[in-house]
Length: 399
Image 1: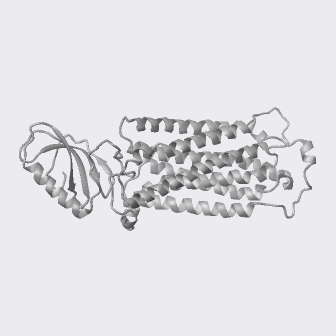
Image 2: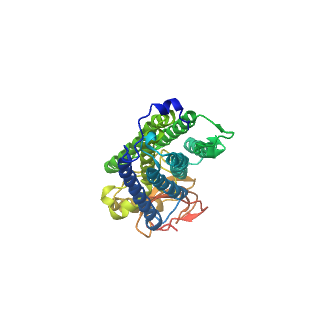
Image 3: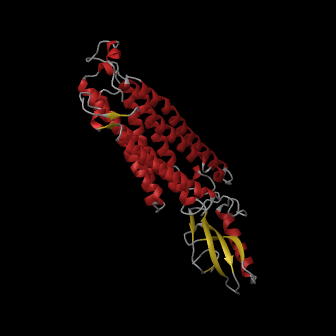
């Protein structure tokens, strides 16, 4: 942060310490709305994953620090109101300006960790559904490494804004110091953030677009991606606001736009990252919202069906699934296979869920020896089995 030259200070109006112009009220409303949304979405996600799906993945763990640091960013922005943020710099007393500069560093760190953990949460979800050793998985690994490097490098850069660091906020320090220009720092930070947001948004499109989903689910998916576009737009709008903050001497006034768009981006990012994890909750309490279940799956622990099994069946109702299951069972029981084959069949578990099974069959008679390569529950998440041998005992049970 640049020190204000005396010539610039001479052109400032007389300070108003009694009733200064402030943007604090507008900012407070935005902060409270964003924090409420973040807490509400986080609690819904935790309930959906822990109590409904009974599955808690690495992406779920990563969204927790993202939400905590986002709330911390909002609290930091509230505390900053009492220390000069959102007012003109000439209306601040010297001690307020010093504290305002300290809060800039706290804001940089919480904003960085919120954005970074949110990106990692989405990438970990991608990794969980990615076909093994596919191009998609390699791209997920690449962007995961880039996001981690981005977090580490800008954490270090934040503590190197000035050497010694207290020279960044101590206006009375006249000792040896080395402070670098902030414009390249913030431009690089926001530019890489925008690039990662855009890449993470585009990355799953080749897998999602071919999914055969009911019309209602397509509309919901389209709405989620539309909100995702808004997160990218928020990151794009934050970039020029950060440039204005670093180029203007009226830092505490110009910081309003940068803080607002950072908080909006964090809120929208956490919401979009949590939508797939809320699907089990919606299926349990409001299944009519999703309509008939399709083949696509973005919430489970297995692979997304994106061309790996080109003969995938269309969506089934429960009655159709039962009839198809019994017909498929009667056909397979009536013949003996002499060569290994691969097929997809439908059956039902003890809990009543309809299950697609990709099966490799070997030689046998009567009951068929088989290796179940993939199980896809229509009412649940994708599951995988690597057991070397399993018997298909009945159309309603796999053991």
